[in-house]
Image (tube, rainbow, N blue to C red):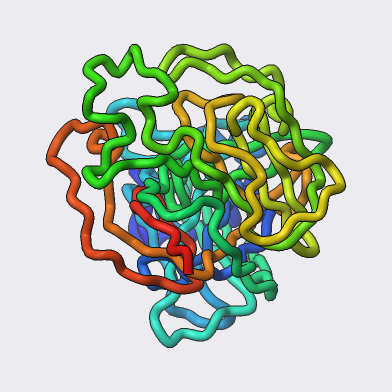
Length: 377
């Protein structure tokens, strides 16, 4: 246990005057690193005004009745995975009176460890030289297995940009408050960006990144396909596309229509909705109520909606509408891994990217920054 500044060592902390909760039960899944993970959020609210600013000192996460933590984060570790982000010059997360902090938790189960039924949390914190602790905050692990799905695209090299594991991304890091709920619809979303054999998203003949056309982008116009048999619960076409890498207006609303542009949403199982966003204008081939088969073409990759460059936004959620839904994990039945790539390399900057020999994987969720391909068979 770490004590904050001004707290005498050995001091027994008082119960913290905070509200703490885990709003969404985590589900275990296997990532493209071969390990089993949980991804979820711990919310902490500094309730009383006279408590003073609360500094988060450390956090432990335990499985079931174990006394050995699955995860330990000191103040520096918390600063790397929590909001609010520490102020300039500060080393720790501080939650002001009347405000809330969110800790984005990424747990990895040691090999051979059984999946726990419950997770519990202990957080040490200080305020005005006084030691506090939150102990308990239990959450049941979801018994539902991550669904196994097919590919949303064919072949290629596709960079999983802003993908699972990147909590500061605009996916996992974006919460939506509506009708009394605070949810994370894009918790496991991936932006698939098409790249060539050198890892570039734009054809090498292009000299000015600010003057590209759709045809200059490797992935633009690629066929987008159904990841499973299902029913179309929502679809839209006819929305104009944006010029690549140009400033765009703020979305009109944090809703499917406000963010996705041209899109398709498929119901592929109970509480499982596959969302495909930013499709090319005029490319959507299905309408609400249509039944689709796995592998069926439903549209083409484009740049409509809240999108800075051509890519396919893909996600699974527990409800058909973006607003109020929770992102759920999934695993691709078969996927080939070609190694990690940075955003700079995507545009031909920094060290040249070189594809590794394909690593054939089964039933894994592609993590952030990995280049993948989807085999035909």
